[in-house]
Image (cartoon, rainbow over all chains, first blue to last red; front, side, top):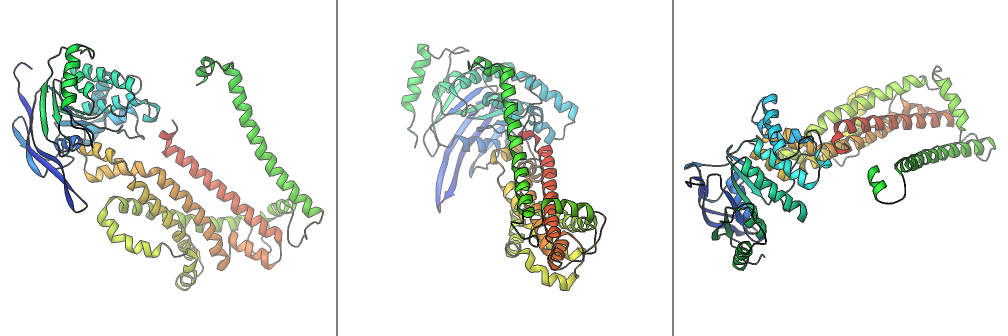
Length: 253
Length: 278
């Protein structure tokens, strides 16, 4: 990140839903620039609209107000340049690891040989070599989410959105996967927007941390994390930043 | 798994553990066989000891004997057993196949496309609770008592579970999988085809199984009312000629064929839903 090039930028995003004849506001006037190849973490208390924000960026939902730009060009809806890793272990149980991974290029109409090659590259990258023919119910939680990551990469997006990808994993697997995602990102640089509600995870992974307020989501503060990688989660700097962010975090509802 | 047994300190070695499992499975099979045999034996004894009047109940041996005779002999109902089975199969398979071919796609489309649902559902909801046999008088007037008429009644009984289960199955598609496909740029129809339909398959098969049971039972009811051949007709004739052996033979053959179809369906299911077990 020598010259900070803005990859993605969202401007004045606001969004709400109608709940019981009332407008429930989920996001309020959020503007954010994300730099090229940056690991940006969006941190916020539970149910504060983090997922909504990601869904808006990915185009799964359309914001009521606001614009999105990639490389300075406005866009709407979903876009090939944006990939997503989901919160739940969103694998198709009737497809093998390979078939799950190659799903994106298959949808795009790529030839089998070509998409297999790309999928294989990322299956190897996430460390699942040898499991191509396994079905998801034979995999552990960590392995399933590795498939999710490989699948997102196989679309070869420029921006990767990750919505609490490790939220459903047990603590040990989660630590391992945090290291893994860092390794994968360093090997295959992409712009990553990673959503979490876990402060340690945020500091461990993020180049920058965007702290959201409680609902409706607003940007409360943006922290630059200038600690060298791999980060030591018990170093004084780490713990200091942790306390700083923790003190500034709203209590979840 | 076997490795774990060794490590877990249960004091069992792998081979012994396997043998124990096998022995258990063998025991269970034996118990089932013993159950059937003692039932047949009790039945045979109670008839031959004349605990029950032979006018009302035939013994297993008599039924078996009749089975062999009926393979070639057409009396007293006018058809050999094979002809009756064939007639019944023709009717039930026609109705059942039509029901699956129309009911499953209809249910899937209704479950996926809201507009289609709104269009079809009101009609379906009215037709749904009508007992299939209540169509019989009208059907006889329309179509007589031939294959078409009976197949139509069977169709109705099998159609409803096909629609309902397919509908429910595709409605239960996990939303996040739909989102996955959306972010991959799939169109709504592609998502229906690639995500919705595979997701619904478990329920679709449940529906088809229920449909098969319905088809088979409605068939007999239909044949008892209006037919000139078929297993239901054979049972009815057995009553008229006061031949309990014919009735029991008919019942047994119906049961056996039903069982055969169920296991065929189970095989098809494990082929399609193989990923569940692998």
